[in-house]
Structure formats: C-alpha cells, structure tokens
Length: 591
Image (tube, rainbow, N blue to C red; front, top):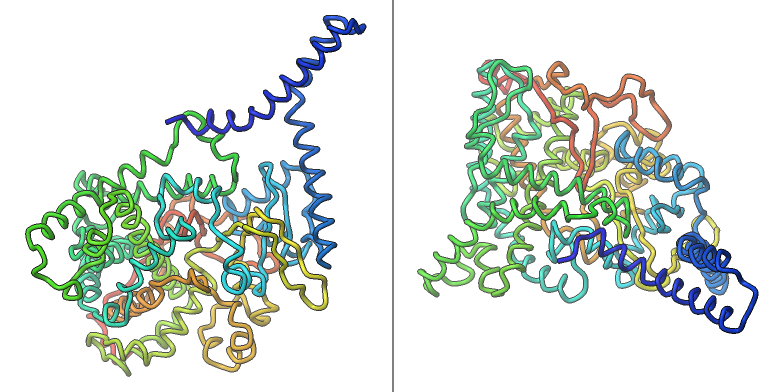
C-alpha cells in the first residue's frame, strides 16, 4: 500500500501536471507559429507555470469559493459565519495553544471576538467552530441527516478505529449501532456484580499501595477498574489489568517490575494513547495530515498492538462457541462478543467494533471518575454531602442497588456537574454533506454553512458559558442541577448540557457509564476520605505553568492540574492523590 505522504502528493500533483502540460502545449504552439519567444523566456514560463501552480490555484480557488458561498448565502437570506482574521501562522498557533496549553483557549478568544459560531482557515481548509447550543442541536439532532463523520474524518481515524460505530456513516453506522444497542438494555446494565468485583479489587490495590506510604495515581487505577469491568461485560472475561499492579511515582524508591511494563493491558493502553495523540494531530491538520506521516502510517503500529490485545480474547471465544454449539440460547448469557461473532463472519468488522466499544467502555468513565476525585480534592465539603447521601440510601458498607443509585439525586447532580466542567470528549466534529442554514440568534441573520464544511463543536467551552449557566458557571456546584437554576437555565434549553452527545448518535452507553461511576464512587467513599493532590510527585511538565493567570471564561490559573485532550480528556501526567482509610474512623461519625 502506498504511504500517506506520496499518496497525498500524487492527488495534489495531478492538477499541477495537467497545468504543466497545458503550459508546455501553449509554448510549443507559440514556437510552431514562429512567435518571438526566446528559449530562456520559454523556459522561465514553463518552470514558472509548474512552480507557481499551487499558489495561484489556491488563491483562485479560495477567492472563487468565497464569492460563490457569499452569493449562495445571500440567495437564502443568510450570511457566512464571521471569518477569523490573521495570517495562517497566527491561526495555527491559536489552534495549537487550544490543545497544548489551556484547553480551548484559542477557540474561546475567537468566540469572544467573533461570536459563538465563526469560521477560520487552517491547513488549506475552512472550518466552522460553534459553542452555540442551537447550532449544536442542529448538527446532532434537528438536521442530523445533513451532517456526517465524513470521508476526511474517516480517513484520519481509519487506522485506529477502522469502520467501527464511532467512525462510520450511513448503513455501516446503522449496522454497528443495531448490533450494539441490545447490550445496553436496562436488564443488562442493572446487573452490578461485575462492578462489585472490580471495585473491590481496585480498593484492595489502593489500600495496599497506601500501606506502603505512596500516593495513588488515581487516573491509572480507575482506568484499570473500567477496563476490567468493560472486558468482562463485553467479552464475558476480564483481562486482569489490576493484576499488573499500580504505578509508583517516578521519585519512589520502588519501581514497577517487568511484569507491570509488559502486561498486555498496559501495552494496550499505551498503544491506544499514542494512537489517540496521532489521531488528534491528524484532526487539527485536516486533509493535509499525510504530510506529517509522509513515509508511513504511524498509527498502524499502535493499532497492531491493540489487535494483539483483543485477538486472544476473540479466538478463545470463537472456540468456546464452536464447542458449545447452540446449547445456550442467544439471550441466555450471550456476551457482546458472542453476538458479534454470530452476526458477521468479517473478522475486520469484529475487530473494529471491539476496539470502538472497548475504548468507549474504558476511557469515558475513567475520565469521569478521575475528575470526580480531582473535584473532591478541591472541595472536601462535597465529600461530606456525598457520604451523607450514601449513608441514607446504602449504609456504611452495603452494596448499592439499581434503585439506590436511581434515588440518589445529589450523587447524580455531582456526576452531572463533573461532566459539565470536565466532559470526557471536549471537542467533536461533523462534516456538512449538503448546504445548511443554521438559525440566527437574537434577531441576527441565519448562518449559511457550505457543503463539505468541517463543523467543530466544543462541549467543554459551551458548558462553561456564563450566559447559559449563570454568573457562577465556572464554579463547581452540583446543586445547580437540583435548585431553581436547573429550571431557569437547563429545562428551557436542554442542549446547553450534552456530555454524551444527543440525537440519533447519542451515546448508547450513557446509563451504563452513570451506573458504573455511581457504583464505584459509593464503594470508594465507603472506604476512603480526606483526598489531597500530591503535587510533589506530579511531573513538572504536567503542572500548570506558574505564569498562568486567571482569564475571563476560564479556570486558567486556578486549576491545580493540567488538562489535556486527544480524543478524550484527562489529567496530564496522571492524578496523584493521597487519602486516608475509613477503617480508622467510623464512617457514621463523619458529617
């Protein structure tokens, strides 16, 4: 298979070669008819046509597209979104700052200057960015059929996610969605035995590490909990990532052994993290991404390691199904993997779907739990409120039930507030497959979105808008989902809060994630208290720069950790936390 870079250049050079041939033909015609062009002039024109093509073609194409789109917008009584001014270098620098610095900072600065929906040009592509709920609603729901993942987006993620449910459109997406939906029914996601086993194992591992006197890398710990829970739920057998142990701080006298480094689950996680980083860069570069991976697809090697992780699970399950035949009814203990194997003989389809669902099952809930504990390190008073509700509905050591969790309103509000300020997927995008008209705001003209436009929407920034959530939008306060603020802001405008997306592509594992996070937090708060970040072991590269100062619309300069995002959001360098066991204190005495 041809490498990404040469493949892109080949596509780009076809028009240039045609231009060169045309120029050569014209020059030959001049020569044939005896015109006065000398050889040096002919040579200069010939070379100039070749070398100058990219510049003048890009200029003419951009100018033509702008005039055409303005005319079409006017015909529909609309206007194009305002265009960010500045050189290409300045625009790209702002984009990079939104990912390498404080998340979304460059995008937010543009929104404050140009409005909540605008367009910018980067890497030869015009893109739309929106923080506007009505426009997000159009993209995800009311004009769903006018938007898709798109061929460019598909190519960017193909070597990581293949044609799985998160990277497909049309019939392929419907096929994957149809296969997946039955396994997130109420009956299946209300069986908490899986959560109980892996929560207990995680808590035991944390207690053992605390006994050694070291802090816990909580992001890693809950990543193992969610990975083991997801693999047992989906495959019928967990991968035992907790058995590899928890990481030690870099400055610890004890370091992890070879078993930890070579454990299949750790190799899987590292491979997927690297794949995500590369995919994120591709997304920012648009259709020019092959230039950054000129001679090889750098994601392929990481996907190969991911497939090595899932292959033994797949092969073992196939053997079991063949040996068992039809003895077990499809609805009697059938796992998601069983269903996939029975639904298709296409091995690649199965592998792609396993990776897609496994990633969703691990990363999104791990992100939610990580930021939930981060919040408790900053707001110890919330620990007391959560524990009070736990004592009321579950008791100091009981196992939570589906009804318990459904009745615990403050716990749900706490999780929602965590998702509001720290959504697992802070940025997402779609491509318009037809021209689209987005509604105008406050009497302004509607916005015209040309076909083929990449439309990015930022849940992270939208969830933090003071005009949508009130003057305290940047403060962490779960009560906003319970008191009059919910009726004032959220009830009349539900699309201001979309942590799991919305519309036909809403996350089908939403309730599973709520149940899993709720169950773990209940068990965790029955066991530990007094949570504090250990900044001494936090890597220097992962600490917010000291020169950061608070700026409007952000928590920059206030956060004790640095956020980073690729496909999902996480704490850079991990979340190192110290805590105390509740064995030394009567849980019922803590108010």
